[in-house]
Image (tube, helix red, strand yellow):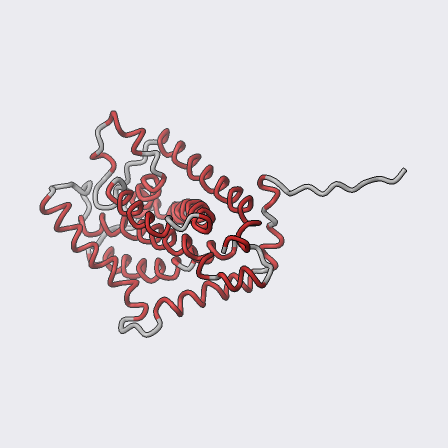
Length: 273
């Protein structure tokens, strides 16, 4: 009696072939470098935009939130306080915007050549680390200007950065996959990002939120990311242990479900695009 071979689709996290992603690492590096060159091609300031945007935002936020609205900055210079939030938020928002359209921008590549599709939105998000690194150098300059002391909390900064990357990748995987099938995402996303900006503590502390709304407010994973940035760099972030734990678990859930959903929808990309 002959035995039959049953082939079933790989489900869950096992569908993410880590070794395969590593084998295509050169393509991953190429996509990041290509996107960076395209981003600043034929611009007057070039990578100077990575400095101009956060600094101008810092000036505007200082005037609006500190001078007009009267928000406090927990005893640190407000410009430094808000710049910390801007660094984290810019990385997230620009990574999300790039990831959401990354698959559609690489239609020819997807329809003609096989490679792990996860590479495309991941490259769109992680290219932001270059801008982030440049802006962070300027941030250190502001710390020197304000004579802000260094502390052991800064050892936690890499952890905060990784947390921000996990959130950006997770949300980016969700929107990039859905955006292939539903083109409305391109129109709705700027509005969604703008809405979440105002309910994220970029220019103010999460301490400003009434206690009865605090738990709900922390369901926004970028709240934890930004407050962890401030805690590690400035020692002033509002980081209640219970809410931080919930935020981290939620961030991991967004990342894992984003990957699983992306792999589930991946088989339709070539046909839909």
